[in-house]
Length: 193
Length: 281
Image (cartoon, rainbow over all chains, first blue to last red; front, side):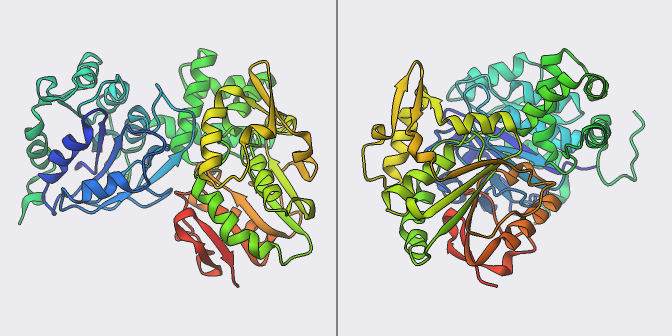
């Protein structure tokens, strides 16, 4: 059973950190990737996807409701929506913000744990928030893999610290080691070229 | 754990429990949540389980079946959806610029705001029509499955704390007046001018189980179907297709696509970025 899905949560400093991680993944990377990056409700539509597109060779989209998850594609939660994962597709919600955040990282990670169980890898990057800690713990509880950015390498360490305290991390890695780890655990086939 | 390796997906017990619960609710009470999108449904069920002090979905099923009050509380959780006035101002700009000029050519206009929740969208549309001089020959049918929230919508009251956000949305949406002209503040709430509701018909309607009830020039249903699975979305699209006049307009949420539905070829985009479509066949 391989890892089919990577879910990443990021907040303060997250755009740069996401660029580093996604930028180091090869175009042959197999799992689909779903991203929740905190930002204001008025952030321009498609803005974050455009920025990340310029930093990675993987195709990046702003998620549309019930869009099928494709291997090696990156899906970004739209501003002012929660992004959730179903088996094989994405779903959106306008439910109230969770811990003041919409998109909420916990909402994304918990739904990924529900839908993909042991096949999901959760990643918590920099942020000044506690969001994502509960979601990462749920991923581990369901047999998935939890990765936390080493707080020492995070622009804001609160979010990685919270995720570590909640016990969701299998690995704590410096920012530049996260992509190599993802490539390694997702199997040699992904670096075939 | 003995996981079934031949299974196409990692089955967990809660998936089964949710299937059983929604089937039980349908058979016992007639509310059909069986084709609601699983991810959001599970979140909402967990919230109810937490509030009831229950550890499993099966325990919730037991309580729901034997305690009608618990069913009411769960119904409130599952049927609520959140919106704001003039959410996505670009949508309302496009309504003003691209749709209202066409609506002017009709002697009378019927608009269906499906899944109107607390009336945030309904009042936004009413204000827009009034400013465009179209309100007096329009009727807005605002429907929702939740009678309590319809009651709230009918009252035209909204939290005062929201007015800053709504005012800024209103301005971005191309509003031509001062937003505060439309309401009076009253003890933490604002009450919108009752005359805005003169041509609004609030009614209970369940998109899952109820049929079409009129022919409409415009149907606005935004961020409601995101809570449905693909099969149910297709069924609701059939309902909307049958309820629209030829050249009628369909407005969806900004992240809802027609592309995946069976009805995509029946519409052409008026403005694809704000999800406004015209029925052409």
